[in-house]
Length: 274
Image (cartoon, rainbow, N blue to C red; front, side):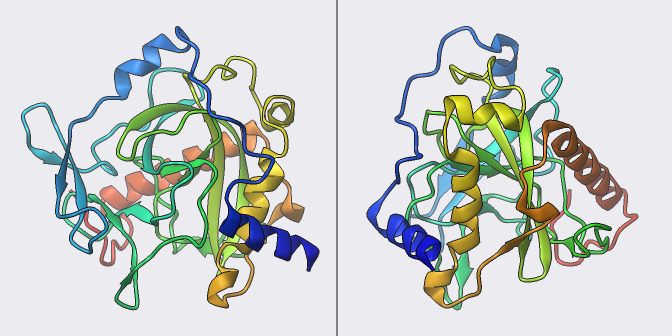
């Protein structure tokens, strides 16, 4: 219960000690990846209202889907484009709307109310485009099916990243979170422009440069729903953060599932596809 008390209290007070101070990223890192980080966006509706939408556009001003039209791969091995939905140290629960036309970013609504975290999330949070966690496939280890969403990314770098930015991130590891009986992978990654990106190459390297981060991510996602009287989330694989090799396999598998979805080989349900 001490862990629970710490997590809930920390969420209400602000960032605990494991959150690294904000630093400007070093210049020159992964310069090629920067080419993939600019997409025009357009705000529709008022921020903090149910009507708010952040829409993505191409160079001609036509609406595009951040889920389907932004490429997953950047051309750098192990580096992928990440759509930032929730900047670090913010509370509104923003997400790519998978059931709306062109999939804009919107604030999640539960029981008619806009959804906020009870405390800020301490990392940048987003998703990988062109991925999908297939709810029709049961994972052999966790015995749970996918959550019907794109693959989630927790970006651990020092800089707060803007909502709607498309950032090249370096995959480091992954947690197999079990949320209400569904498998909801959390890929741990670092902005390819972060000052430590060239030094952190796998999940085991994180502690040296951002101490407490992996355990912090696990405990934050374990407890974050409990203020709403919901049960804690569980984790597969003995709660271990799996290494980069496994994380890259998850990215590949979910990209393959997305391709099958787009090809009509899987029932799309209420999802909006191109």
